Length: 89
Image: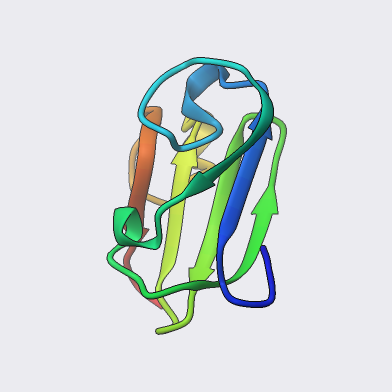
């Protein structure tokens, strides 16, 4: 996450962990447009083994990637290839 709220992702794309809408590995940083999360910017991001979560400037939590054992907090175990709002915060 840059100082101006941009989110850059790279690495393994398995299970949609990069949230770019596909399963492609990225060897170079790829910018995720904040609009993909309905946000003007991102303040924080955390990465797990095959999933990612981000906090928007508006205080909304988004999750994507491998959903096994409910790790995305979305009420199921399905993978997500792009950001989905985590409700309840």
